[in-house]
Length: 79
Image (tube, rainbow, N blue to C red):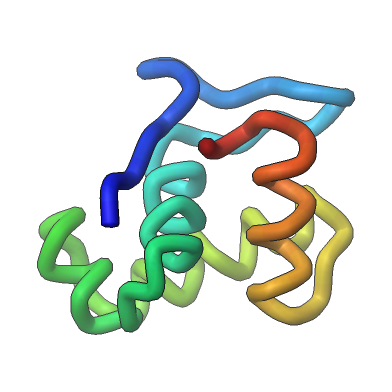
């Protein structure tokens, strides 16, 4: 699947700002990638992926990953 990020800088919509890495990790989750795959693609440790996704979920006020992905897609933070 193709992953599309909305901007190169930090993503900011509806009072939510995601860093480029947070947005990229969330977009890769939306594309069905595992933490290990995301870590390889972003060239970071798997623990960093978990941190990025936790921060994104916290900023979006979402608990499970699926809810975070849905909110980010609806708000236009990822496409």
